[in-house]
Length: 186
Length: 368
Image (tube, rainbow over all chains, first blue to last red; front, side, top):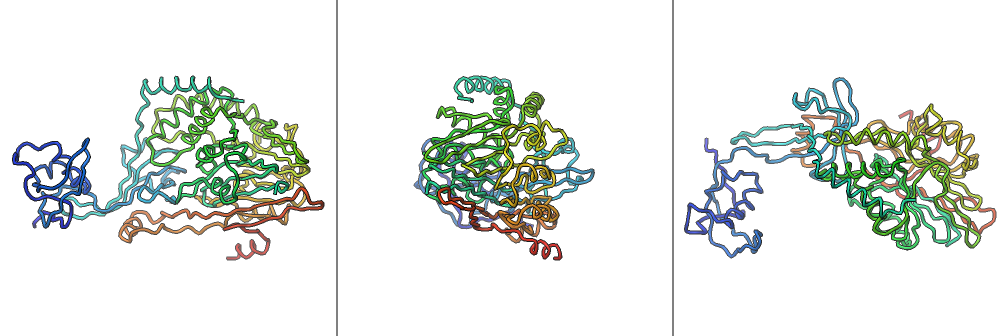
């Protein structure tokens, strides 16, 4: 089965922008990233894509002008990508021996929040030690494409801390000392 | 009308929060807490003040943060920024530098979170107060934080909590928390409800008690028993009572009603419908034993799944059928009193989802 995907009527590219095929200019890479990156491809998948001349220019790595159109261009084979997903950042509110209850902040439409119960079995082994009241996790439900195969999936991943560095610690401590001096604290 | 005083409870049900906008006469406006419209992300008390046509920059004299639960603090920095003549009041620990250090760490940890957080709001408020050189007033038991006596209108705001003991315990708690700033979870405090600021407002002979989220403890060095047993400034005839903690059992003590609140007062509360629904029907029945004037800002919701793309809804339902949306709705209970009119009484105006609770309605709901 053919595993290539055709993108129609999108901002893309047909012939070489530059005569030199082996060296990709920085501008070319920026342009390719701007287009392919949006649909979740990795650079290795599109680095050999061809492009046509256009009226675009670049200024400080920004694309100025309308990106060129193309018709029925075959692009390299996809590897893995998510085609549609709902994503939340979640906070564990309650925990029992086999389940937990969480508040879900909708990252797709950040307005009203949701709540849900989860089984502890849904948490991967590596994340179990992070499961506590107050813990933060990301939950994603949707459709993935793995080499052309559509898969419905649910992924839970607990947030790991980025340590506050010694530099940040000192910065906050110094800032606190300055704030205390100026604050009219009654 | 400068002789008309006003107490407006803005509530949202669902855990989106509650706040109060007070007019104490003589163009003295005070705001207690803040919450946000989840769609517009705007501060609800700020929007209300704009709707009323208040001169926000000059006439809001004080913004009070009773405690830093998200449902009482979101949008407070946006509000404070616009209230350019306002001081800011909140409870902090005994060691102020340590308190600011904790706020600094927690807001830095929350810096990369895509959602708002209480410590980010606190941090912004402190920055605003510092830049403006306004007063940051420490809330502690039996402290008068605002008073005005002009043109026949005497108004005063007193904080009835937290106690010195609670603030000292908070100091020890922060010392422990500061060691945990590298953990992956949202920092979990002993509930900020312990440190809630309960507010007493006196305008001429009218008294109002705002109960925030203060709960009852068996230890009379904290909670409602501390106010009942140790406060020297609490008066005993409140006409209006903002029922604490969404009408929960934890926030209720009979002595509060018999010793502090007057007979047949106006009582108002904001429900809560995230997880456990509050108030429970038995508590509504209990409150109706004390008053005929019980109001709720919104009706409790029956929560359902959020509307979204059909394919995604099916996928979510397949993996977890318990996902439900906590609906947002706003309600305002506005109590007004004309000081210039002899024999006057409080007039209640209900807006949006606000409702009067009656015994018949409760019985019908229970039968359903």
